[in-house]
Length: 239
Image (tube, rainbow, N blue to C red):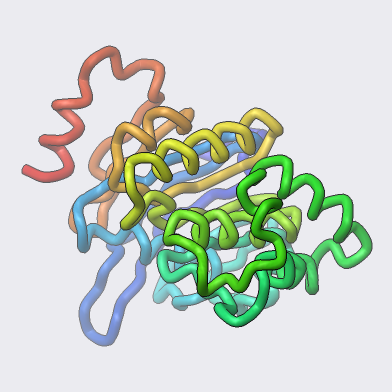
């Protein structure tokens, strides 16, 4: 059901790769200012759902309504201009450019007039990047590169930030740092939809979660209502 403050509503979404259907009519919504975590085992359709929202894959059926506009099948660059910005697992950085140059590219389509102000905001979230602003991105650690990828997305002033496995492949130290940064974005009012395998990180920052299993939504709820039922969630995901 669509609530009055829903920013994103996914309904009856089907996605196929060739003859293999990955998503079988899933539906969920994200409200303004909310952080929703999408959980599930590998192959459950988590990343596919984000890629459909951002326009990287085309649904075969269903709707993806963002602030009143059905984006299903819309080109990725048009979806980006609406304010839906994704940080993919591959990060898609320009390794020979500096940290600051990569960040500035995030504002080249959206927010051209507010680059400097937004750059200062990003450096506030990521003081480590301020120290490395002139350093080639290829020389950074994996965790620092993830910070650049998230920071570049923030430069575009997204209305909906999609994070695909932000903790993927990172050391525990960087997982904690990324979690702190996501929490800070949340406290500043960011709306986020996050695919995450690290349940501790997901439950630290999310308001609500949904579980995908074999391409369907199998469960979900509010994080505050869990009260020690994490083991049940693990069983739902993996058993």
